[in-house]
Length: 573
Image (cartoon, rainbow, N blue to C red; front, side):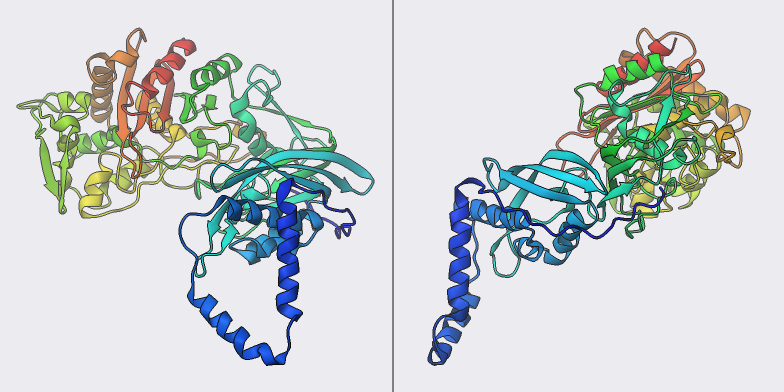
């Protein structure tokens, strides 16, 4: 981004509107505070100190009352509306952080004449609406949005306070972000699909965050001119807030790297044009498949090149498909199987142990529903997704074997993908004992997203890793990531046989029914602490396309993510 420096804020001169019936409570509280501070004489000091000590010993506890919730919310909103930043911050449980962001609301975001109207509380949560004006030089624009706050008991004394987080100020803010109004450093970008049609968030709701990322990366390079905007300036992945002078494309440094976001245009800039690899028909199909499924995300690639043909998320606020950092469950067995095959620890049609249980590193691992396959082959274990068939090989492996395989063959976990927008490039850390064993089945410290797992299937189909990309490297001369080696022809043939068999006769068969041609697939279910249902995963290829998807808290991947992925493979022809 370019410079987004804000000028000094105008002093607030507006009178606060009365918000609900609690305004009187706030005023009464203020009067009591003044009396306590200035009333009485010196002779009352000992009594006052005794009362103060007694009060200090009594810490409020128990559920918040409706009156506490309402009065605390009103105290905060009224002070904020009056421009009393210190008073509003004092009504929160993190006054320092609140004061910084609320000060920037007027000074940097140039928001004035704000009116906050509280809604009906739902327990400790109080929704509120905001109507204000954003002013920069002689340009103004109305601002209206809804937010919410939650009242909690402050640690230490139990006093009710607003639970501070940046989203209270605006729902698109995360902690570390700022609101800034000024000349946008990055001109707008008119993104085009591979056929030359314009891509808009209105037509493709899943692509809102992608379009933000394209502007962040290519705004200055696409030939446009900036306008004046109110934007969310993101805090950077290293914990430091952006200085307002822009950000660079994340190189897989973490799942939290997201692009700045435009909230309001005071004057439009002139967009430059940028062509992407997205296929309009497949993008529409992807949007339809995740529509109404908040936890669903999917990516479709061209296996032989890495071109991203479609990406969609059921929840549009975060691009899980590119930035998600989730345990991939048994879809990781594709990578693990390639390693076992290379090391001669498994062979497709030879017997391979699949007991009900296998203990390693102090953990007892088991299969779903505690099944076992007696005298079965590795092909049968892969197709049925037998956990112990993989865990049983942990004693034969070094701690870094899986990490090396993921990096050297599949291009994962190197933090060097250059897709065109921020991405998380997978994480396969070196682990030991039980955690290393868990990594073999996509648990432990392994983290992936649909982009990563679609790339895994694409690598199997094409025979070598091709870094996924949304914008051709010829646009800006960037270098795509590469893997240091490929699988042998024998290993590759065996891995394709395993995935093909799974698509026809294994856990992926139901989802892949009707998907003809040269196909392969793998299902996965990843347990997550605190979730009643595991995340369901599915990765597959058909011809020269590969896809992967996840449905968070969806259960078995073959039942949830599988139909989404299979539908896209069919649509791709």
